[in-house]
Image (tube, rainbow, N blue to C red; front, side, top):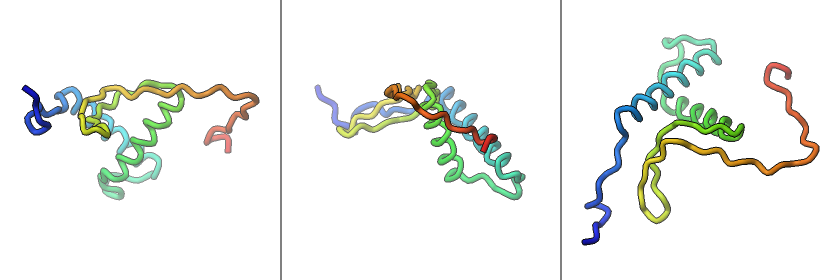
Length: 107
């Protein structure tokens, strides 16, 4: 018997996945407040900012070769859905004579 997509079991985050995502959101929000030198009253919780900054942090860590634990439910082009717990880094192609960039505090 073939299952149609509506008959397939729905993929859901476990309690541990939800805890991890909440922890990330809270840490990113605190990071935003620190960078802006603002309090929660001055800069209220906003998932638009939190999501954008979390994506940037994840992308940076992946670019630096780190494996990131940020669970996600992914829908493929063919419509299949699966859970990815870890985002894997893509290993960069080696380049010759690459200049070292200055860090933010050296600029």
